[in-house]
Length: 198
Ligand SMILES: [Zn+2]
Image 1: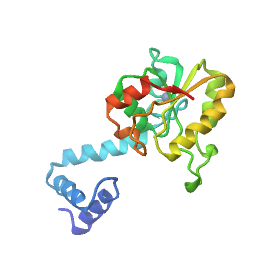
Image 2: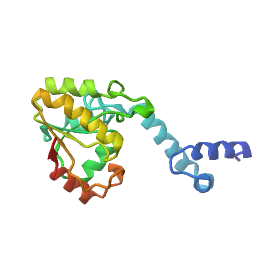
Image 3: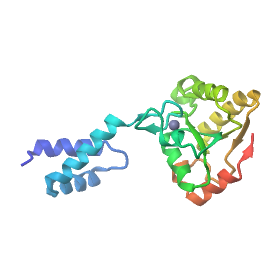
Image 4: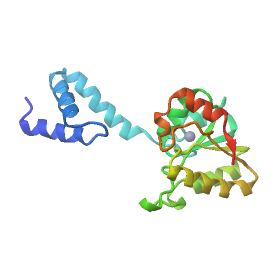
């Protein structure tokens, strides 16, 4: 049987997870205590596997289990368009809409002077290299519709437009200050289709 100390350790670890308060941590911990050993082992193994096998795509910085992510390796994708997002979870949100068939580039954050994050901390240099090497005609900037997202979008537009590449931004209609990942698929899909040139 687990000692109280073991149980407390599990509660502490669960409580560190985003969105898990003390009550949820307790519910999960007791569920695992009552579950059979095999179920608990599968969960533990899934966590270990994801940490061992998932890393960043060498081209677009989305999550990948090979050198490149499944989207970069998919020959059916439109390779003339890159959609620029802040985080890998934004790729998931846009993929869910089914409205976009091009490639992505994940910045790994957004410009935020308050948090001392400037362009050099993000994967912007790699994006500019891709624009030099790949046959990209349009860059669609899909950073979140908040201050940092807008700052990042205008920095990218200023940097990319002189290269002769069309730069566009998701249409308004997304809740200002909100996160792409929480936008419903229909709204986000429309915002991609009705994107405007910057
Ligand atoms: Zn990729």
